Length: 40
Image (tube, rainbow, N blue to C red; front, side):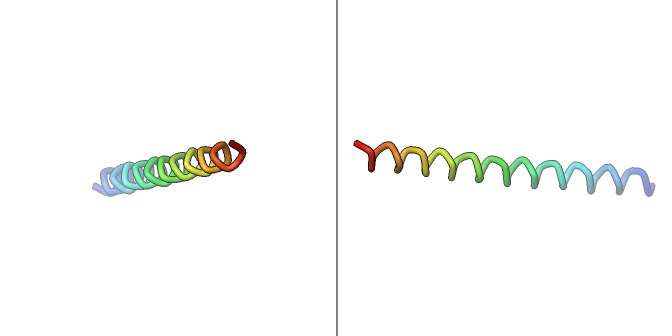
């Protein structure tokens, strides 16, 4: 029972980390796009 709850917490943590990485990557891509536009 306790092992299952630990596994569930781990899954939730992994999904939150994936979401955070996705938002960071999208923001980084947007920043690069803005830099390229400003350079042009």
